[in-house]
Image (cartoon, rainbow, N blue to C red; front, side, top):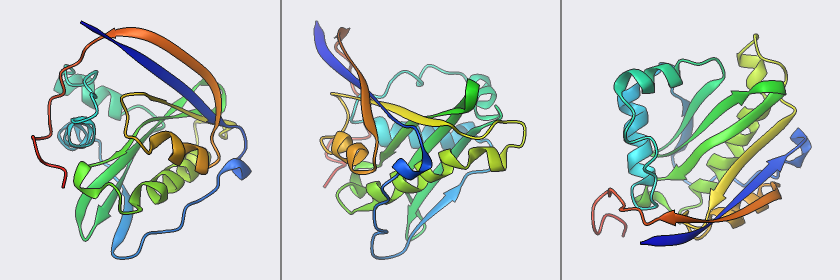
Length: 188
């Protein structure tokens, strides 16, 4: 059985395109995971994407995760609420001063608390200043991402409110995906 999947690609072409969200109330911090950790990255990937059909990285070996995370310009920024991981944004440098927001999202229990807009704002700002942390990379000229019709219901609106502009839409037929979790009933 197949499903119709719409994928939207969005971009910012200048740092001034970013329209930051206000920080949420409470104890929310965003910290870079500076030590490449396949275990932690796989946890974040499956915890955030388990209910929205993120499955493409589940087949990666430990060595493949390590190789990916160790590339220059790959960064993971994690949002914590009261010391508990709430979500993450993963950046990846590409050729020509382009940075992709490869993954972004919140663990289901943390959605709807105004953390997502703040995390996306922070992660996008880190994409724009990525070259400052990686001297071998050129300055960022473009930040882009994609989202699809399987993502959370507020994803597209969040991207647009942060100043991303749509530049490509693709519709395809994909095999129906079984979602790996996180667990039935995990979201309040």
